[in-house]
Length: 310
Image 1 (cartoon, rainbow, N blue to C red):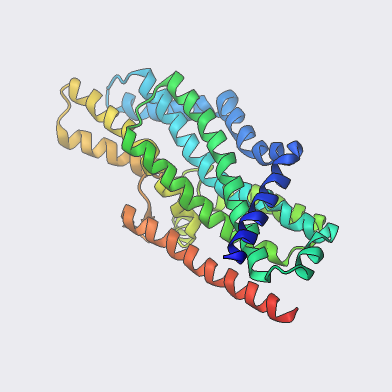
Image 2: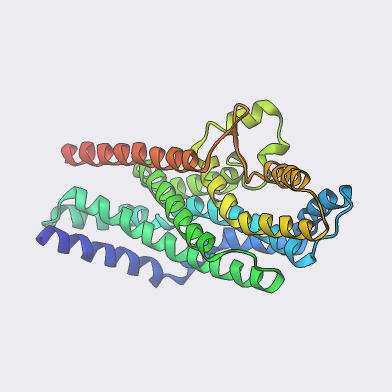
């Protein structure tokens, strides 16, 4: 019981330490905010044109609110799935700063077990990342409500579940990788590398379907791809249904509707494929959470080894 109280105290301390520094909080928000601003100012019309081309090709007229909202939903799925990882790496700065400033030495000589200290950093990082992503989600959902909201209550709830799964993956990955980082330069290098590359290798910035077949197959081997996939599914589900309803009003037959919707889901990664075989939603969750389990085992192993060396 005493160790639990120490764990809670350390989690509170780490979380307060992070939010006490406004600059650190702003730095965590900078990547998702920049992506959002770039979309609204430059990329929005590119996505909208992509949707319009599909309907113009089939001589269909679709409400602008659905198209605008769907483009925004696609972007939100990208921002949140990427930020679940990139923000986790940035907000883990508390652990690195404690190493640099020597605070970790004070903890290790205190009556607190080493695993408790490591778990406190992990839980605090999860909590901080979750708060940051809730802020980003709120901003994005306000935008979607303005341009066109077609997300059901169930999908909105599942989006939060997806965020939790993504953050779990991101914080565990950060905990494993950054356990070997002990300098500000190392933290900056790792954070920059993850921020600049992760969105591309998981298919968040560009649809995987637009890549060459070999690259598509390679990306399908990475668990982060499925973190994006589950987010895409729930963000775009309501818009795909709205597209289908609009086509029914124009007396389009169900076979054509199904073909158009499936084609759009394939083109914008609401459907993912593993070497040509469609991956069910349940399998996406299984891959992502299975990877989290492996990372958790690795994290526990690192904690045990480090604790034995002391």
